[in-house]
Length: 489
Image (cartoon, rainbow, N blue to C red):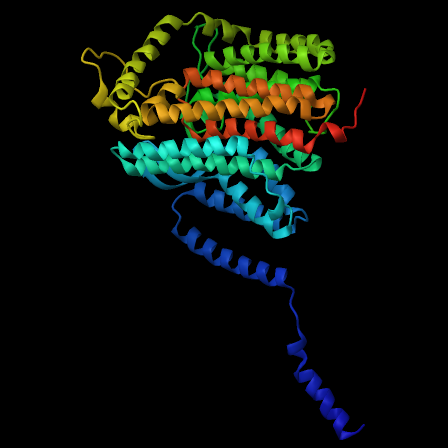
């Protein structure tokens, strides 16, 4: 072998590292793993609670599973539906009863957006802004911003405005993520799986007598005792009032009724008939009057819309009614206790609260007292003869009227009407075999409007419920259109 050949061989070996090309995704994964390991090491050393240590371990396991998943966007789309009722948050700013935080649902959706744009699952050139809804929503946000002219606490108003803006972003993300039939089915599977697990947890909570969420917090609620005539309303895994869990069960039950009445079947991994019976049982166990009345109102709306748009689906309606009757009879003792409660006193108590809100409106009729500041200023607007319980007024509409004046109230009503109109127009655009499902979403939106007559409806969990429902009502007619329907007789 010549000296030149030997020299060239050595040179090639020396230059071999220059030819090394490590794939970008491996480099980034290794770097991310190293950073997370160091952060986890420091976090564990500073922890003083086993609860948070367990949460870190769970996050680590989920992250490890995530790294090996081949379809990461689909995973987070599924998780967005699955995690919606399981409310956890990281508080960034806490002011009175108003908090600026990152919730588990918002975090999942943020990661889904990043991955969607990175791998092309979300097409930047085909983003749907749904102007019929987003423009009224933007006007409502502007009205909330204008109310800062009269606000006594700009921090609370700005935090409330950020929370409201989050709902617009979540709505836009979901209607763009659910852009075809596979994505729609993935999201619905996560949504109904979360619902099934929630039903089991809720029954356990009623048996144990206290509410617990996935990070181990507990809220004592007491036991329901039919013989003693006492009921206890559990919260499910929602961090807010028990009425939120009741609204959740009513909306999910309605959607499952619509799915059951549909001729075309979607593989959502939950039998709609079984699911709707589970949901109604949990709704009765919640012992909340307005969601119970809301589901009755929604069923009446469904009946009218089915007569107009899909009369054939009414043939299966009697089976639905039989199933709901069985579920209702199982929980009849709890329902009878609630029926025998003093409804007149409860109504008078809540009607008394409206006097404070009307005083706010009369003092600032155009722009209100400031978005999100009702609790901080309510004592300044007490009537001279005030007696009784003092709390936030128990109606969303009057709350918005007091906080944002006639400008904000008008913008909110326009927004709500446009959401309902777009959802209704979707009945004709969705696959004919799935019209009952779209009709159930329209009925669910009506049920939320009814609920807002009787409830503050100012928590993020309730807003998630409404805007998830609105997003489905907009996205399903696009992802499951009539032109591409594969009808099943």
